[in-house]
Image (cartoon, rainbow, N blue to C red; front, side, top):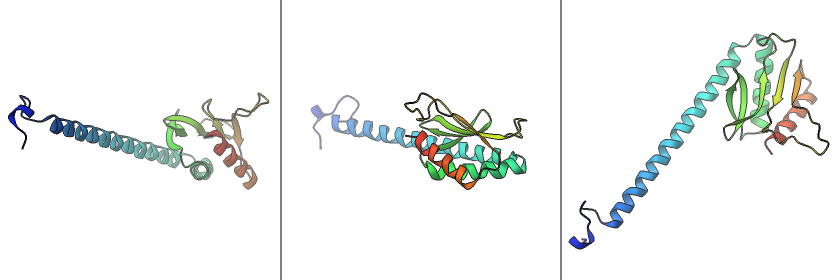
Length: 151
C-alpha cells in the first residue's frame, strides 16, 4: 500500500494516475476506431444504395466495376463522390464511376482523381475512360490502372 507521502491530494499515486491516463487514451482510440468503422460501413451502404438507384443497364455495369475495384485494390473504401460511387484511400477519392444515364450522357465513365498515382514520364496519361459494354480485356486493363492508381 502506498504511503501517505506517495499519494497526491486527489488520493491517487503517480502510477495510478498514469494507468488511468493510459486507459482513457485506450478508450478514446477505441471510440475513434468505432466511429471510423461506422462511417466506413455507412459510406459503403450509401454506395450500395446509389448502385441500386441506377437504371438497370448502368447498375449492372456499375456493380461489375464496383466488384472489380474492390478486388483490384482492397485498400480502397467505397464512398459517394459528387453523388456517384467513388473509392478512397485514406479518406481521399482516388477513382470513381459516373453513370451515363443518371448524368444524361451517352455513356458511363470511370475516372481517376489527381490523387491517383498514374503519372508517367511522358507527361500524358488518361484520367477518364468511357465505359460502353467494356470487354473482359478492357475491364482487366481498368483493374491494372486501379492497382497502379493506389501505388
